[in-house]
Length: 288
Image (cartoon, rainbow, N blue to C red; front, side):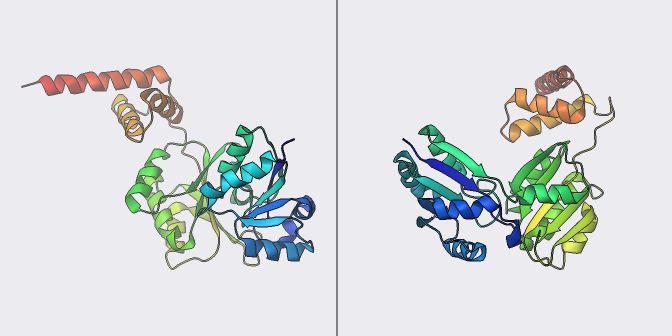
């Protein structure tokens, strides 16, 4: 029989937010794979539980090498518990590779649901939460960051990012440039901790607030792009947006679908705009 991989949510701040099942799993697991073994020990001590199995580190630096080892343990019947520093494994934390390896070997994968900075920030943001997308961390380099933001500038769903405190002001400024300074947003800092703070307002205002420096764990929530009025986007602009999508690595069909959805127009109209733009370009290049 194969074992079981258990993904366990851990507190993002207040220890009391730990799910009751977490203590049971810490005591029962044959192997506990932790992003930071020292934090794991402190967590177990705070919960009043003794970790029953072998503890191994599982973080970004050794994730690729350690995944096959843990997959072998699972194949031999072990119960492996995966915990990260805060929140759910795999959400901008180690976990995806091990889940994929376990599934490939036919191992059962289950979870102990727990705190999530993404969902907590969404709920506190006062922005629409019926449709949203999580974008992880923005690229560190300014050019790559600007390019990534241009890719999602027309996204209608609410957007969520994690960000390092020392890069927050630069990221908010880049968002204001890409989305417009009046786009509504919320910066959620130190969620569920003693100094929890949620700042809501236009991106330009939040960028100015963050300029002197901000501390703590940061989650940024940004309102999705407004739906354009029908007929407001002309053919040239539609073709340009498709070209941007293709330059970003999308197949033309995918880029056309994304632009049509963002602009609120039929895909056929976008396709015709692309064809017309290409025909115009070819005619121009043939002119003397």
